[in-house]
Image 1 (tube, rainbow, N blue to C red):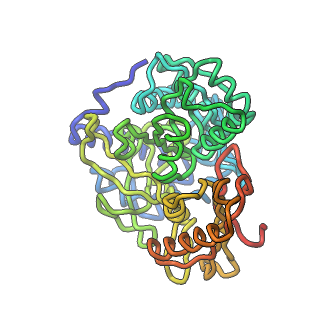
Image 2: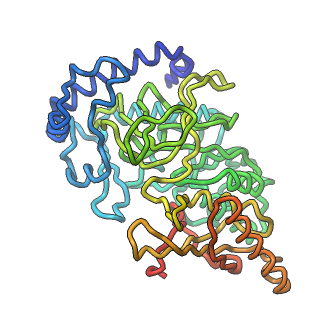
Length: 434
């Protein structure tokens, strides 16, 4: 497997030269082969010849999620259909699914990116990696599987679910790495406890966790309960799947595979560039994708970027963890709030479990004057005297007001009240859904 470590540590000037060469090639490719992009370029009065420097990227049109649905299923292909060897897709819970087709070249590139990604996180060929991401149309399972095999690690392809068997296999097969969503890592810990198993006494040492936003507080909770180092990973179905970026063990931002993905940060309202160090919406252009290249995809994910070299020696830009989504932002009495911010406040308070639900009233578009947060409390607190519960509720209300500048109704519920999911956790619900 060619990990190309020299690419991960190349000087910025060389990397930018590689990026612009690949961008020019890809822009020409979509202009000639994808009618959607040809129309979009003409509307912006731009041609491939106009793209000469990284600064010219802003001349190009954005791509949004709706464009994938409007061109479902094959309207964005840049290759003949017979060159497609694999098709993944999103869940399609809000309409038509997002189709993610791959050529053989795409599959090979993705495997190499994921092998590099896992190596960056700390996985080696000596590891036994239990892959509890879902296999099938979801990109997670097979993305991790191919990358781990190419790296040379032993893969246990458990997929999601059947949690008791997962724990049995962790014990019996000596898994050293677990790959799953952060919320499922907590389910593993909770189920193991019910089984009388202490995962900290197994060989598990590392978790590569993603597919949903999670806070630093949740990371600490996972690390404590499972006895592992928990590493954050990021990816999107529209771009490639997992592998866009990943943390190294220094945990100071996720290294973006910039030789494959050109990133920008914009203000989601004005669409103007946002400087390094400030938060904005992540925009990604694929540089090597063959089947379905994507130009300036608005991810809606809110992050910040850091171009400084990492202690590990890698020079590629690092992105922060996703702090929220521009389309998931709640507006509570004029204050912009992301679910991940609420999670950060909750998990700082002793006696609270890492399971919560944010209940909003969406009667008015983009306005939520009332906010209610359901929070599971630990067994000892819930079974204690009412006075202790009231004190905890008061403290949570106070912390929410102090840190976020909003007031919210707090509803304390007993352990295991809030539904668990084996896939991505659902944190926000409309009151009409209850």
